[in-house]
Length: 115
Image (cartoon, rainbow, N blue to C red; front, side):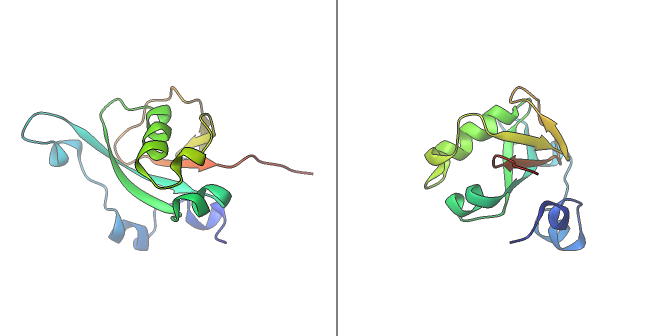
């Protein structure tokens, strides 16, 4: 399985799949502004959602907790994700109330163990 260090920085492959866009470019005619994020899933979470990376659009001012709610409701087996998983935004651990921004890379991390 690919490790965190192998997928964190934006590379040419991920840029082709998920280009960074300005929020104004993806706002709808109704005035609902959206941001684009890249959600990274690891370990059991990647297995449950059958993906290691998901490009997603979220409302402006969405939080890491909003992302968890969406993953749990919109994807098969999503309800098996914990309500409060470990989260990181742009390689920094965050709480669930952290506000996401356009172009953020959000990791949903399984429990960590070390020695």
